[in-house]
Image (tube, rainbow, N blue to C red):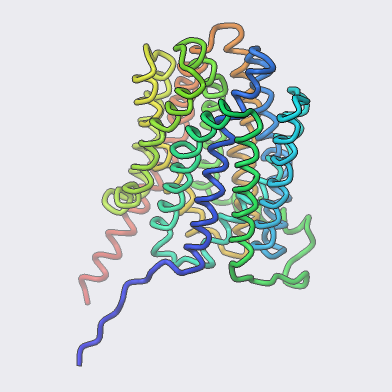
Length: 416
């Protein structure tokens, strides 16, 4: 008789999570295309448009650390589906107010802040729960699948649907987004639970301190978190006025704007499909360096785009390499951080990495107002280059250590 050992496969629980992400992210894509178009019906001031992006991401600065401790303390599945249910209610309110014409920038900013608060809890919990339902050997593949469906939904399927439905009725895309949140919440509620009792965890303040201490003590992840902070600041410094660059400078219609985002998503989709293989072939840290260097030049080029085709191509390249960065860094955290600390460490990491997004968005609005909507992108590219040069010694040292460890393991295996 011969015995065969089957390779590990992604579980049914993982695929329920995947389907929830697929439905949710189509709705997110609809919302992402419709909300700036809705803002343009109220104002054309780039500073006011940037307030919405700042309000959306401000919770990552204010709530990431305590949310991480909550994710480690309570049932992660329950936190995920409840946050989605609250988002369904909030977007439903936006749909009603849009239908009756009672929306303003302050009202939209409040709604964006509420949605951002739910995103903080959901985002940290979803990354923390993945190692519980996926073997470590499959984390790159699992994250790649999730990033693929996230990209397809948020920037390939959702935006054209959002811009087309907005042209039909202002309230329609927000009603579609509310329905997607509700369906996603229903799917997430079916995932297996891992109960966490109060006796399993220290007091909240101590738990937060443990997460801070762990991340600050890990040189590579600490450096990647700070580098992410600079990169997300720069991304939003340029990207916050993308709708103005596309519709006012390059004269795209609202429908064409959604198609631009969809075309740009091709790069992200390809990245999600092949980047896990790239990581396996060349290694995680070389892949990370490739993504960082590429995005410096891509960002500088976006601001110089002469037409929509060039802009879409550069956005597609940016999506490809950003997905590569995401797959590597998320998988590294999931592999290196103990499961019982993953929520807290992710909370600190995301606070450092996403906390500057509101400032980046506001800065982008001011830069666009003073120097034009193209100016933010080359400025962002220059800042990303400086940050990469500062972080490079740490990344190279970690790459050298990983190569030395691999060589030692190979030599040891050759002795037996």
